[in-house]
Structures are given as C-alpha cells and as structure tokens.
Image 1 (cartoon, rainbow, N blue to C red):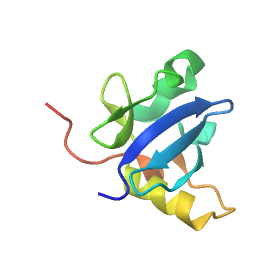
Image 2: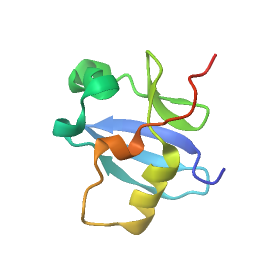
Image 3: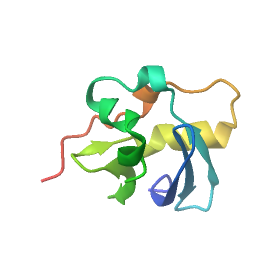
Image 4: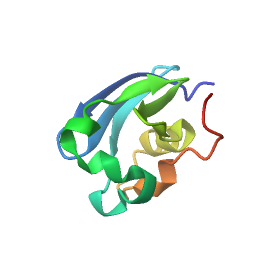
Length: 96
C-alpha cells in the first residue's frame, strides 16, 4: 500500500522520522503517557532505538508494531494536534 513505510529513524523524545512508499516523509511523535500496555517497552530509550520495518509497518522486537495507515494520516495532515500512541497500535493478527 502507499502507506507502507520504507524508512524509519528514531529521534529524541520518542519521535520517529518516517518515509512512506509514495515518498511522503515526516515525523510522528509518540506521547509517553500513552506508552502503556503492549507499548510500555518503548519507554526504554535503548529499546525504542531498536525500531525496524516489518511488512511495511514500524515495529520493534517482540511483535510490537504501529499501524502505518494512522501514521500516514498524521504526517499527511500535518495536524498540530498530536495523535495518541494508541492510535497507531496495529490490531492485525501477529505475524507467524
């Protein structure tokens, strides 16, 4: 899909630089108060920096991933209202 992520770089303050398949680039800011439950490991900065791309989605070890379509919408809109981290949780079944 056009919202597949082809590049991701961790940045200070729980921010990610992302580039999508269609060339759109931007930053996604995760809010620390939303990094709970399955996202809690991301609070560890060293773990956060282990970000990778898995099947077009931003992911971390342990099958933690974020929904690329929600990230695309945030970057494309250039909205000043930050999305909550929970907006990006990928609710697809875990990869085998």
